[in-house]
Length: 367
Ligand SMILES: [Fe+2]
Image (cartoon, rainbow, N blue to C red):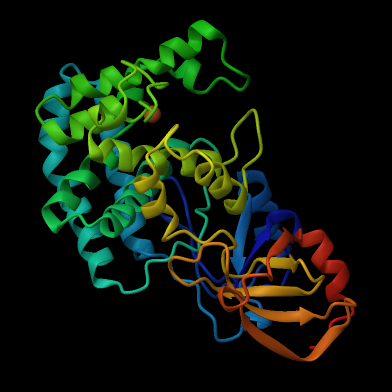
């Protein structure tokens, strides 16, 4: 399957991953054939892309690191938590629901520990207005994978996961008019948003580890963050692990004022931030598990060849396993070659082709 932008969807294409709505309901099932009507609805909902079956990747499945149902259930739990501030007693509201959220996190931890292949190859399909809920679950999953690589034990992972899934719970204290503002925030509005870190600390006061993650997830290793400008290991390890995932997931999502960074650009941003925003050790653990070129990406190499990414080995985020489709003269291979670019350090990806560019090549491709 391949990720296809909604504007390139065509009737007859087969859905490869289900699409979930904001209440966790399935909007589009796997294996459904698209029609003009479905495509029009997807556009009106603001769905940015879908995962579609593609015979170029026959035999290659792209699985999420946790089950779709687990993810959808977790998003629902987070939604209820973020309503905390609208209740008369937010602290009591949160503590009553912590057990449910903890159970959800424990299930995610168990699923991840059962997996042997944890490479993150998918981008979440997020509908407009659902940013916060999907984001919290993504940060939780990414932080746990990073925590596993970092060497945390199961109990530590559960604490990290609980903090990560609730890191933005303090947003419930920020006026909706600011959170939903369709234009750039003014300086005073941004100061107001920053308050979510301290508000999260208050709301989670009964949960020491989770409370620290909420409080410190915008602190930075070099002391440049907020709310207190803590630096180095003054910042709890769980907050350090969650904050790199928070940044990665935030920049790979489209926001009102900018488009989404593709994974390889977001990863370069983080890889280059060693010991300034994040510690080198935390960055190394994060980069171990996230593919710069997710499965199905069409990439052009330094020698001019073009291929489709099949998979990425752990620890080699920039060096995917690729089925080469076009040779150095941009002629299609009659028998596509599979290459592990991690075995060819001089063969590097020079850029990722857009769907529009690839469509031009593909018209001449032998099927
Ligand atoms: Fe935040």
